[in-house]
Amino acid sequence: MKSKFKPYYAYFVLAMVLMCRMMVQWHWKGFGFAYGYTGTGEQFGDKFFEMSKFYPQLKNWYGLLAGLLYTVPYSFFGLVAGKISDGVNRKLFLGIVIALSGLTMGVSGFVSSFAVFSVMRIFSGMLNSASNPLSFSLIADYFPPEKRATANSLIQAGNYIGGGLSSLTIILISMYGW
Image (tube, rainbow, N blue to C red; front, side, top):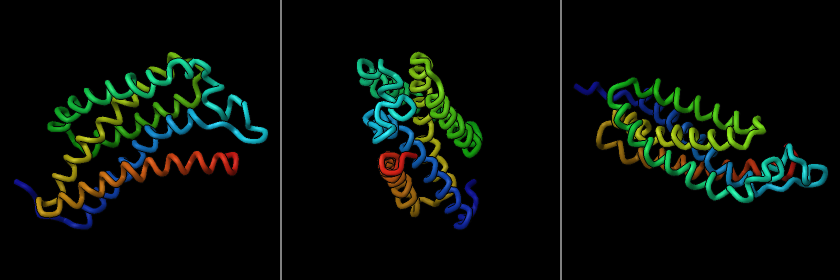
């Protein structure tokens, strides 16, 4: 039996899920933007600032890393995560997925092994895809049917906001050398 609609908590859950969706897209789009980034001034050609200089293999393998190694796990693990989410605490599962997704991005930024970087892209795709069924399931748990379309469209807006934040990040790095 569904519980009574509690708007404050439901909108809090929506805000948390929206932030998760933004972060997922920020990570995903960030790889593409970071690959094309070239440092300016003293940063130009510096391996610390330029991903393509740090991993010279990217020139030959970018399509594989941005495409196949990310999207195939993304496509299939979303199905698995959807099935798992039916029987677990979805809030906890989403929290774990987002934390692990952030960890894959963090590891990607600090390793010098192209093989480890590639494995992190696979795990990043898997974990990011899990956020989709979890997000929509949580909305179904906390919002009545007449409010779900609006809540789901806000989650989808998070995808584009996250992509925009990714682009903005590269602009800020370019302008201020962060």
